[in-house]
Length: 439
Image 1 (cartoon, rainbow, N blue to C red):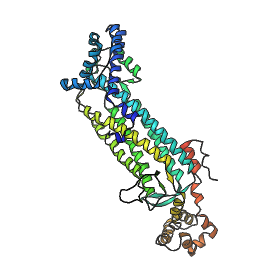
Image 2 (image 1 turned 45 degrees about the horizontal axis):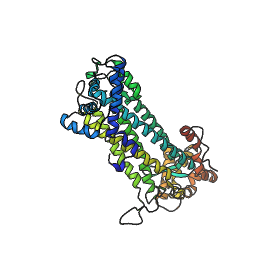
Image 3 (image 1 turned 90 degrees about the vertical axis):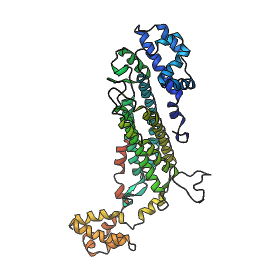
Image 4 (image 1 turned 90 degrees about the horizontal axis):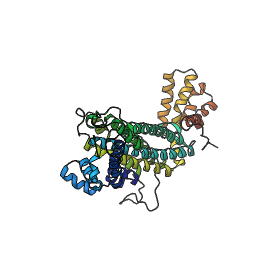
């Protein structure tokens, strides 16, 4: 991933230095276990830890000749360790190192992503309670539907990112596994206790039955989870982008002093951050199909998955880390225009209360079909401008015979639509929902 969309802590997980450090720890821990089992001298295991070093530039130089990265790494470490280096990698195969390392990296990446979601959840919870009773219009197909509150709108995203967090926790557990079972996974030349020791030292579970690689359904599930989280990021970003449109102007990204929106038009305040998040979501989701295609390898293994993972494992995790952090910042600083929300809510002259009138007429004895036709006729006239829906209905003799004027007025009460907000908030946030209570 390019530096523009990379954060240092996540990017460091995928650096050559980190990768080779994990490789070294895998080999050194394996040596410790082999020494304890009497397979190699204990002095050799101590020498590996004491003198083991590596130089990424030197490894690259060796690989240009050997055309094999793990052999290049082992050759470079041997240059530092000396004669005891002959005991490195006993009974192991390259995928023991590569796949176990990837498990460590993906687990660490998942930890950062989970922390990112925790920050976003905190921001959503605070802003949802702040606007728990801020009235706004709910839209379907982009068209006014019925009233809701901006707090409820944000609560839907909080619930979604709770699920996103749970998916990442599950995905982490599934992919954080070690494989130190040798060629084709039979443990023919290495004791299973070596694998158990390395896994324990690295905080990984054990792959119960591997081929020459860890089965790629684990990785497919991990990146599929990232893809779903990215889509949730995009859903919230698209919502904010829509609310910032000039015709709505109900909410917008914070526009900092000195910020410029356009090289040509000084008035522009564009939703550039959330537009960027839509783009980054596409980058993350681009990893999902290749990860699914990596599951079906030839027999015990081939390397058709290798180049793919070397590209999308860093890119997808780095992009999602950046996106989640950016989204949290957008929510934390989101500018909310309550007056505009109310003005838009009132714009169509009460049309948003049409369902209440429809239901009231059916309760008063008129068939649903007749009630619908009656309300729709007045609603379509109000849509074109002129008298409000309430005034048109109040002047209708059928309505006035069935619904008293005072009762008709009650059908246009906004409070009706917020009576269960507490219930929704308890479901999403638990019992601590009094923050933001309407005064």
